[in-house]
Length: 170
Image 1 (tube, rainbow, N blue to C red):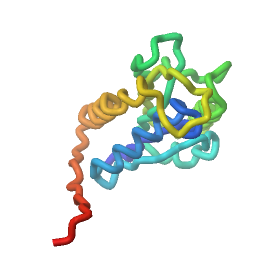
Image 2 (tube, helix red, strand yellow):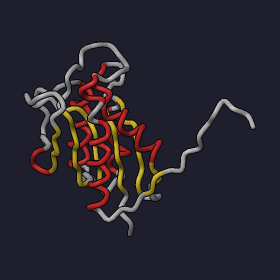
Image 3 (cartoon, rainbow, N blue to C red):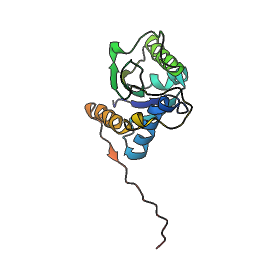
Image 4 (cartoon, rainbow, N blue to C red):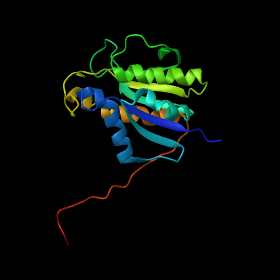
């Protein structure tokens, strides 16, 4: 049986760097075609509402910002014990709800093998749909890290052929 793999970006794209995961998911969707067993999801700030969706996946790759007292732009990869089983003080409400959803999946014995790929944010307080320049330049490396996760699972994907639109009519 083919494993169901979900790549999910979470965060609030109205609070500057908080929307990083969503920006990465949008770029992945725009640039790549994935097999039927791989789905891309804008998890936004849905938190516990993601429970059913998460529990259907065999593998889950989450892209988010992670405040870890590092330098803005630092990358993190969390899996297994490094992902808190019980939520204490987290960085934002969506993380509390998302981690609670993972905990609920454990209770239901339907927790997917999960990897969280994150980047240390620079600004998650300013109301803006734009990422800070420091974090904007981390989108490409995060796409590469995400594709490397798929490579390690033996998943094939391909770049989309883009149609170029011009103003000139011939």
